[in-house]
Image (cartoon, rainbow, N blue to C red; front, top):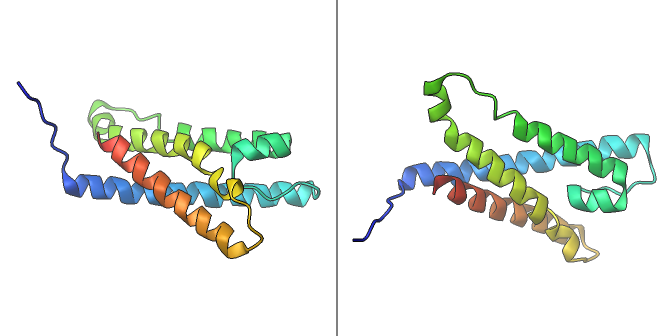
Length: 140
C-alpha cells in the first residue's frame, strides 16, 4: 500500500514567498542591529550573520541572537484553538526560516571577494535559498 501526500501548489507558493520575505526581514533587522551596535562600539565590523558576529564581536553576536530569538518567539503565543490550528504553518515557517538563517547567513562571509556587488548578490542568494527551504519544509 502506497501513501502519497499531495501538497497544494498554491499554498506551497505562498509559503515559499512568505519564507523569502521573512528571510529578507531578518536580514534587514540584523543589519540595523549591527549598525546600531557599530554606532556605540565603533571598532566592531558590520555583520548580518549572528554566528559570525558571536565569534568576531561577542557583544554584537549576543544582541543579534537575542533579537532573532525575540522574532521567533513573537509567532509562538497564539491563544484559541481555531486560530492556533490556522496559524500552525506560520509558526513552522518562522522556525525553519529562522534556524536556516543562522546557517545560511554565513554564505556571504564564506566567499571573500573585494567587490560589494558579490556580497550583495550572496546576501540576496542566501535569502532566496533560505526562504525556499523554509517554505517547502513548513509545507510538508
